[in-house]
Length: 112
Image (tube, rainbow, N blue to C red; front, side, top):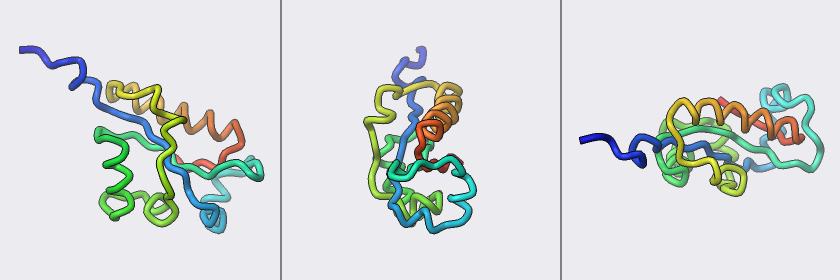
């Protein structure tokens, strides 16, 4: 039997709102020289899990990005839900494209 399309396309991109305190981290500031004052700080990632489950894992310190673990506030599905789910390669590319697009819009972005 073949793999269902739903199973094949189970990767997701996701965006996490980071608290303003992340701007106090020099490494984050260096990665965002064109940040526009007042725009959100975000983390952009991709996962084979449901984004809610992945966010919970970050917050619990399980395979966590330090910025999400320490500064993650909530998911911003309005910025990513329309793209999901997708195949692995599509998610890898979309993670980068989404981060670039948000950075160009003036957001402070961390993308691992």
